[in-house]
Amino acid sequence: MAGTADDKAPAPNAQLLRGQKALVTGANSGIGLATAIALGRAGADVVVNYVAGADEAEKVVEQIKAHGVRAYAHQADVSDEDQVVAMVAQMVEDFGTIDIMVANAGLQRDAPLTDMTLAHWQKVIDVNLTGQFLCAREAAKEFMRRGVVEEVSRSAGKIICMSSVHQVIPWSGHVNYASSKGGVGMLMQTLAQELAPQRIRVNAIAPGAIRTPINYDAWSTPEAEADLLRLIPYKRVGDPEDIANAAVAMASDLLDYVVGSTLYVDGGMTLFPGFATGG
Ligand code: NAD
Image (cartoon, rainbow, N blue to C red):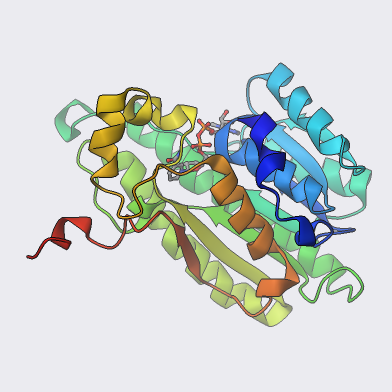
């Protein structure tokens, strides 16, 4: 997947993020990986966060550096307060500041309600929701300290919360995940309202079905893919680059007046496809 990121690059945007410093969590796989590379291609220096899989993270770093920008990998668990604080502090030391936080790391621990353990509920909430809170908080502190630097961006900083269509679509057998993403929606809107006066833009991207390891079973066989396509009016499963391109746009000054929005990148999955043939 990493090798295809460049093929889909929108060439005119090559330097849209020149001089900006970005951190992407969970950036050694799937959507985070593609987003980290796309931000680097758009001119940003990038910190590649990972929790496990140092080799993959180093490969992402090399691909980003090939675009002539700086990059390094940083291991941290986004649900651990001390590790997130240290990660952002290290970035400020190494890169001077942070302009873009992509709070992307996430996971699933699926089970029907009556089989779901408290540990699986808590793990998903800790990573998917508390992790985004911690990352947003640490980035916002630095955005406020530094303020707007006009030559870099019209905004003092951008926080992009990786949400999901399950921010609004209930999902049986995944109550921990759907609750975490519903929470991300309100986290994002509340932070957007609170931080907008300091010229900090907080927004969310809500992917539909994207081909990554997190949902491998949903697209890896022709039967599974056909089943999945019933839910997608646009009739294709998304690629990580679809989300990465949205993240570059969301982080750039092209969308400087977009504050507190959720951009659904889902091939129409949130359009109630079951009603396409009448209700
Ligand atoms: P993925 O499994 O490929 O990537 C998830 C990444 O998060 C991995 O790098 C993983 O190591 C990392 N991660 C997990 N726990 C972590 C922790 N405690 N600290 C730091 N990193 C951690 O899956 P993906 O599809 O690329 O998912 C990325 C984000 O997109 C997630 O938030 C997911 O909920 C969201 N999303 C994905 C889809 C999809 O269809 N793939 C749809 C909607 C939303």
